[in-house]
Structure formats: C-alpha cells, structure tokens
Image 1: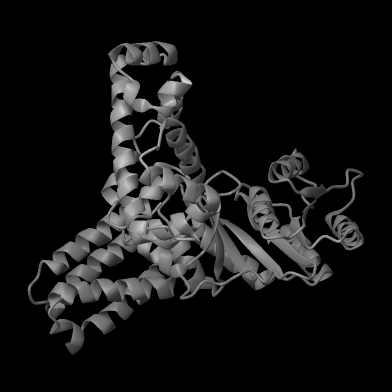
Image 2: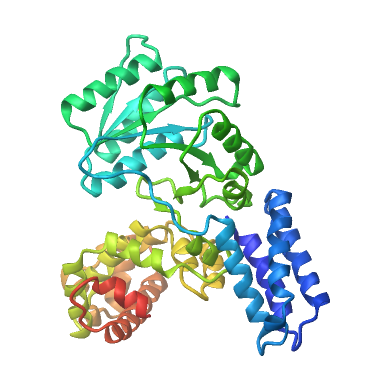
Length: 446
C-alpha cells in the first residue's frame, strides 16, 4: 500500500544524505517533498502540515545541523514523528481471560467487517478463548449466510435468528445464549450501510447502549482514503468507539487513512488486516508500521509469523537435517508450503530490511510458480526426492514430461534447491541449536 510513499520518502532522504553540510534551505526543500508525498498518499492536509512542522522544529537545531551525519539524523526524526503520528505505542484490545468479553463491530458496507469478525474469532480461539459470532445484519441479502460461512472456516459457532427479529432482540437473546453456554468472547456483527445516515446511527447507538462492551471497534476500509477518516470521526462522535481495525492494507491504495485516523479522531488502530485469508490479521504496532513505510523492514512481525506457522520441534529437526546435509526435496516442498502460509513472497520480502527492491520484483512473480514447483517435485520418484544427487539428464526429461514442464524448468528447480540448501545451511550455522524459538531467533540473527 505504501510503495509510492516509501519511494518518494527514500528519494528525499537520499538527497539530504548527499549534502555534506545541511542548511535550512536544504531541510525546507526536503520537507516540501515529504509534504507532497503525504498529500499524494491522501493524508489529511492538516495532519501533513503538523507532521512536517514538527520535523522542521526538531531538524533546524544545532545538534542536527552540526552533526557528522545530519541526513541520517533527519531520517531518525522522520521515523520518530511517524511513530507518533501512527499512535506512538501499540494498543491492545480490552479482551481478557476468565470473563465473558463482548465486542461490537461497526462499519460501512463493504469495509470487510464480517470477515474481520471471523479473523478476530480465529485469532482469539488460538489463544484459548471460546468465541461466538452473532449476526445482527438483518438487512443485507446473504449477510447472515456470509457470517456462517466465515465462522465455519474459522471453526467457531455462529448465533442467528431467522424469524424477522430486530437486531436489538437478537442481541439480547444472543447474550443470554452466550451466558448459558459459557462463551468467553462474543463478537457482534452489525449491519453496514453505503453511507453514514441518521437511521444507521440510531440503531448503532441503541445496540451500543444495550450492553457494556469491552470494545467497540470500527472497521475501516483503507482503500477509501480520507472518506474513511471522516467516517471514523462521525462514528466516534455519535457512538463512541474504543479502536479501529484497518482492512485491505495489502491493497494498492495510497494509505492516507492509516496515517490520518489516529491524529484526526484520537482513536487507536488496534488491528490491521493484511490479506484475504482469515489468518491475515496483525496487531497494529506504530513503530513497525513506520519501519515498513520508510523501507526499513519489519523483522519482528516476520519472526512472529514464522514462529506461528513453524512447529518448534519440526524446526529443530529441520535444522539438524540441514547441518547433517540430509535436506532433500521432501523437506524443500514442506518448507515452501509453510512459507506460503506466511503470506506472499512480496509481503515477506518487504519485512526484511534492504529487500524493498527485491519485493518489487516479486510483485510480478507468477503466483502459480509454487504449483509448478510442487508438480515437478511430485513427479519425482521417492528415491529422487530423498536423494536429489541421483537426478541425471534422463531423469530430468522424465520429471519434466510427468509434470508438464520443460527440461530446462527441472534444471532450474535443481539449481534453486542447491542454492536454498546452501543458504539454509549458512543460516543454521549462524543460528546454532537454540532450544526455544529456534527458527525465529535464527531469522532474527540473520
């Protein structure tokens, strides 16, 4: 989402770092570029102005102007102010164990609210909660069915009533059902509208006042830009929200909503949805997001993703195989499937400092490439998968024919395998045999 903004900011920093001595004129020229980049990203103009004014106030100082690396100092100032703009510190949802937590989700139609319900439920079910989804959208065709589908995908229960009951009545019955059955987290999916109107707000206010909610979260579509910020302001004034969930942060919109919403509304961003899959929900960390925007990567989130998807015992077993030189195509295929669960290669590359250029190249990578690799590996005999060294030209031709690929494709796969094996062995040596969180720590050291 922030690719264009990242590129513009990096160009401005490059010019500033290229100056041996910085003057106020140099700083002002750089800040003009930064302000234009923010406005182009659909950041609220008042927010953009305050942001650059704060940077200028800190940058035009004796400590910065006379330092040995003034350009680097300004980069640090921009990063610090960007963290403040995004909220300063991460804010967690008010969800705790040993009680029944009630969460009300609000948002306009098409914001991704119903899917966000299932993503939240999946996240907390993994943490030991017993979630219940409640369908309050009695207006939109197939809304209840959609919640049932995503609820089933998340493996959680869904409470519905099909007798024409009003949302407030459904909420009351759902609450009693949750109490009786001992659910620890109840997520209410409210109806959305195409625009904020008096009727919608009156209904939402009634629902808001019916129960004492631990959290009232507004789901914001990042791709709607400043309209999303305006919506957040109206909901906060009328209903009172405790936080926001930003959806579609993996899209190609300009990202102004993410950069403006906290400053304009004073409401924290708690979660960010970074993909369509139900696992694609992240806690929002302002410092990590600032790193991504500035092209500095986000290694901590990458490690968390890895440790969530990779089993610790399997990681240690894999490490031993790599060090013992017995890593084979069966292991290679298993690792590719694990990487796929973490997201696209482009998203992963963006989290690694200095890999922004590589991420741009991966953006054009054919998403079917994994399927082709899998087809070639599955066309090998068990002996070939376990002992790749025995694959000669005749075996390559047979594998290519069996997978519908070319002889050269199989040769390229063998080269990729050797390179991956070599790199993983180097990483294993650097990581050592760490008993806890082996893979994540190994990646962190790298």
